[in-house]
Length: 88
Image (cartoon, rainbow, N blue to C red; front, side, top):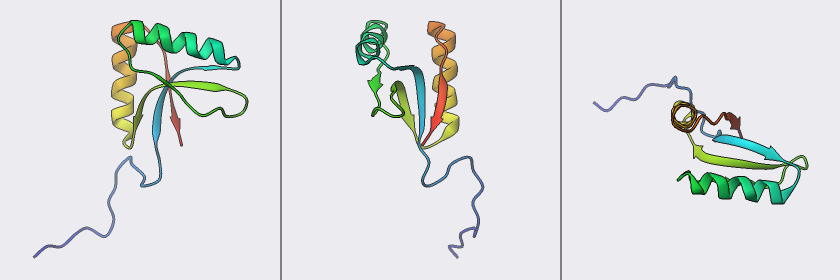
C-alpha cells in the first residue's frame, strides 16, 4: 500500500526561497565591487533585483532553510564573512 502522510512537517514551504545575503548596497557600483571581491575569493555571488532602493548580494539560493544555514556557517567559518538569510 502506498499511503502518504496527510501533513508533512518540515522547515520548507512550497512557496519560500531562502537567499544567503552578504550585503545590501544603495549604490550599484559598490554592489558590483562586492561581487568581484567575492569572486576573487572563489565565492559564487550574484546581484538580486533592486528592492527598496537596495541592491542585495546573494551567495546562494535554496528551497530549504537548513541548506541556506549550512552555507551561511561555511562562509562565516572559511572566509570570516557574515551574512543573513532573506526569505522570499
